[in-house]
Amino acid sequence: MMKTKVLSSVVIAAGLLFGATSLSYADSKTYPASECVRWDERVDPVTFLNFGRRFNPSTTLRLRLDCPAVKDRSTDVRNSWIRVIDQHPNDQVCAQFIAYKQLGALTVIRGTPQLCTTLAFVSATPVQLNTGALAAIPADAHYYFSVLRIPMNFNGAVSGVVTYAVDEVDFE
Image 1: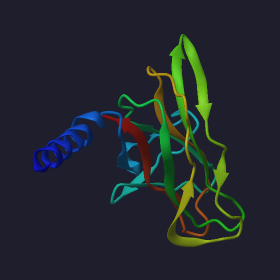
Image 2: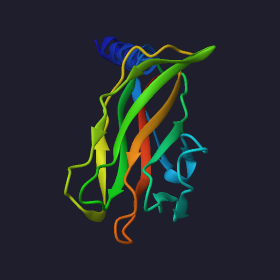
Image 3: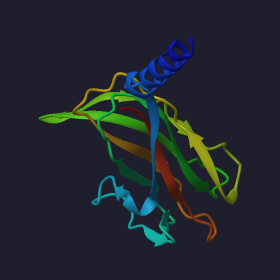
């Protein structure tokens, strides 16, 4: 009887240890805005960096950025977000998370809805835009945040991007 209990315990433990090969875990990566690049260097204003944050100093032009993110082997993104500072009372910071695949010309495969800061909410405190999840992303796709709009300098107050993150679903 005692041998049966011990053997059963060993079999259950081995099953839990070796049989759980399809467990998923979060593979989260956070990036500084210093990783972002201007969308079009011919049109977008030159940015300035401050502690890894990227700001728009222009008093006449909005800024657009592309912010790349590492894609490992996952085909699902559990969550994505971008932290921004919006100090313009009449304009918004807007962004979306995109997975794309290169097929000659750039082809967008999947994208989250565009999110924007609240109009007339002016603060030097970062606001997090939760761009959310994406599923069934092709294995050879790439990730980036498209920051579609960063308002111009308003009376010396600048807006910009602080950090961004991607939380992939990973399997072992």
